[in-house]
Amino acid sequence: MVHQKKQQGIEAMGKSRGGLSTKIHAAVDALGNPVRLFLTKGQASDHTKAQALIEGFNATYIIADKGYDSDAFITAIQNNQAIPVIPPRRNRNSLETTTKLSIRNET
Image (cartoon, rainbow, N blue to C red; front, side, top):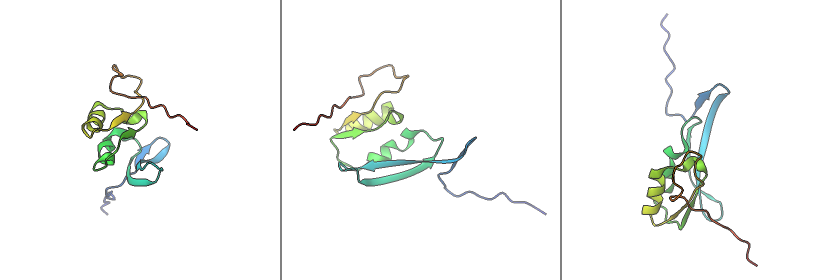
């Protein structure tokens, strides 16, 4: 009897010691409504889908967590005349490419 391995299609399921995992990458509008979603394997780096998330959008600011901090992504944001608001990774040598955004409640 010949056993064939079950072929996996293009799935966004990663394996780790804890089990299966998936990451959801989302682009949202100013009100927090999702406008684009991507699924990746749990162990995939966040910035692998970063440029695809913002492609085709006209934004003033791009706000992301430090997992999206990469020189290529920040350059892509700046090339689209937007301002990156991304906290730097711990190992980043230069802080010039990131911007801190202060949000104040003005009454």
